[in-house]
Image (cartoon, rainbow, N blue to C red):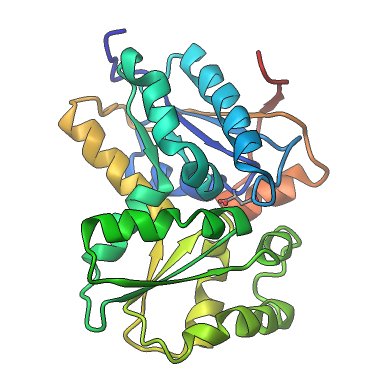
Length: 274
Ligand code: DGL
């Protein structure tokens, strides 16, 4: 297929959390049409097996390919950890670039000035258990030490709208305890939901030189670089947004606003595989 700059960017996640990536893409690439798929019927992925996560990711990728997108962004850290290279291979013949949050986040963390050569990563059990961030960082720089911590309670706390509460703060104090004496240069927010905790994390870690790496911003920036290089930027003033989910959760609008910062006017429910 000949790449077309008017084609949409496909973005997907296990649920609604990937709207944090949509938000960053809308900010950095305002002219792009976006097709989003959130697998709300099967979320969370973070506690599922690698085989199951891969199977779901194949189905969603095939759906986006049918929609003739010009690029696919894996917004979900858990999917990127389990399946990024498999998805790249799956669509390679169709000439559709596939970018994942892990590669983009690891590169951004390596660009942070490194005084202590120490990077922290927080994510779901599946993401941290996969060691994907460590691998992506140490493939590029073996001198960096990577410290990881799974923070599974943060997803439900974010979805409850409690990211700014004392409950979130106390939870973060427990999860981040082991980072307090590590003198990290950067901390990667390795989960779609974690940008909501940015301020709380900074205040709990009390490390004035710490840089927070938001993998949502990192992948949006990377997408811009790749589209520019391939001359595939859509130059229209404002792109459209199409939102598909596999189930319409209760409080969908509330969750969408939490992650995207605005209401999602239309959402279509579809079952996979299509
Ligand atoms: N989207 C997932 C991630 O970024 C978090 C939610 C889930 O466990 O499915 O890892």
